Image (tube, rainbow, N blue to C red; front, top):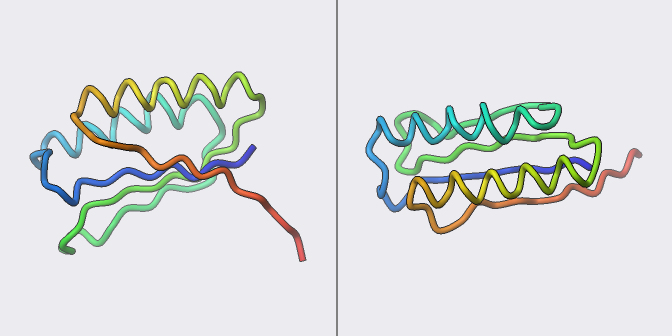
Length: 92
């Protein structure tokens, strides 16, 4: 299963230090459960702060664990949501 996991701080709830720690913790605890294919972040001088990871989970159990950990981290950092987009891949 390939999942795109996206987070943001467009509402400025997080200070710069908190945002940095949020990204570090998501990477270390959620992304590390699976096999990361890539990581992207918004323009550092842009109006919005966003980050996205593409992660492959080998089993449904890994994906379920990652979702729960992402929810836990989201709550810790007072965020309303984490986008969890399961990719449907078609090779053409």
